[in-house]
Amino acid sequence: MRRTLLLSALLLAFASAQSAAGSGASDVLVTMSVDVDGSFRNLQLLRGESVEAAAASFARSNGLVENRDDAAVRQVIDQLSGMLKGRMAELQATQTVQLALPLTVDGYSGELKKYESESIDAAVERFLYDTGLNMDAMRELYPQLVAIVEQKLAELQPPRKELFSFEITIDGASAVVRHFEGGSPVEEAMHTLRTMNIREGEQMDRLVPQLANEITRQLAAAAEETRSEPPHSEPQRSPAPTELFSIPLTINSQAAVLVHLDGMTARETALRFLNENGITDPADVGRYLPQLVDIVDARMSEYLRDEAAAQVADVAPAPAPAPSRRLLLTLPVNLGDNRSANLEYYEGDSVERTVELFLAAVGLAESPSFSDSVAQLAGVVRQRLAAQQQEDEQQALEAQRRQQQQQRELELQQQQAQAPATAPQAAPLVSLPVTLSGLVYTLEYFKGQDVGLVANAFCVEKHELVRAELGLSFDGDQLQECKRVLVTTLRERLAAGRQPAPPASGRGDLLFTLDIDDGEGGSYQLPFHRNDDVRAVATAFCEQHGLDLSNVPALEHGIQSQLAQR
Image (cartoon, rainbow, N blue to C red; front, side, top):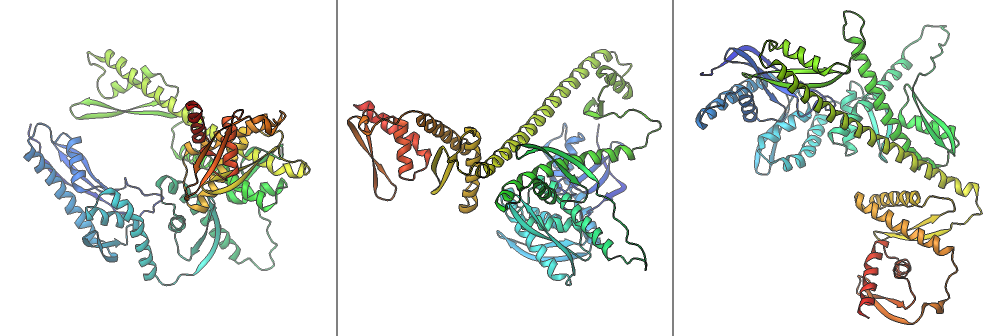
């Protein structure tokens, strides 16, 4: 059957200037209704997608390239591409150019245009795709071009009046959020996060709504304060803040509850909780505050999701009260003849009954293979449900493990902070100098502490200090190796402390001396006696010369090699 393409009179197009919190790589720029063999199908161009890719995707999904040679396929794609290009040209011709910036990038010279009705991100994406650069080059240039466009737009705008500002701290980095008269809270939130080098999609999607809501809240509070009151009116008492949620924690070896009130930020809630529980020392507050803020932010995200789901349920009209049904699975089903439909399965429903109703709704109830189709499709639904349930359980288990780890680290830090106050006269059982990337730190172990927790907290805290001071990064394997070496060394030191130290003469005859290169043109001497312990000698050598404990295994290997040759 010959297929024809007829452009319908219905042309739907939009290029809205959505903010980055609500926009993404999947925003639809143009939608065109195309007649394919008497049936209207939507030809769409997504943000960041080339017109050729959109045309090819539409042709494949609607069977326009089946049983055709390359020339015919190319003709179909060119026809669809021409439609999209023409419509895009019409849209751009009707839009007002807000900024035109001539640029030369890697040999490509062109003009970056930003229209009044589009976002900065959309303008930069369109320009980058016109350059024809590869994706790596685009990713590198994207933040630079966004910053340039923001600066140029700011220069074009008249000076704005700053209404208020406040400070935020994210992952140890601080920044000032400023709100100007007539400014958009979402745009201001995005600008603040970019100054903190936060540009990742998932993190931006999580933080932008929270920060924009805080700007909106403070804007409303400022408007309420400036609102004129009637003369001789009695001051109205503001209602008590509403509790949004509470989190049980352990502080100072006692159970406590962290309460988050409506209108308060995560930082304010964490500071109030520490103050109520007697933790006011600046050093202690600096250690506990980031963990508490992360806990409150995580719980706030869950609260907002629950609230959004509840609002959607309240808005949805229902002919009669009915128990809420949760959609668990949406399964696209190919019905043949280029037809497809979505099978929806709700929690608590019968799988077989759901499949039977679906097949009846699509006109297959009288099919001779109805029973076989029910059995086959029900099996597919059960497989998808089982896979989805397993994924949900794994995500829940991972979230629980992260929360437990945060709780254990918080308890350990509290224990360490209390140790000098409760027993100032007690001395550490083990004081161990540790070298990390050339920096020397001291690990102190007190009686009653857990060796694994002490080693883990030390490695995490000191690697973070090294990262901040030297700009180095560490992976999970390096942290695990640090913890393993410290746990082994602490246990050996503790075991050695419970036994009488052997006399110096008990080391026996000198067997050999290793010459160890110090990396600066010199060397260290490592003597080994007949009665020496290999690991103890290697560890003591590293501590004596300020070497990283990660060198212990190499020294052990060198000693063992010499022993094997004797």
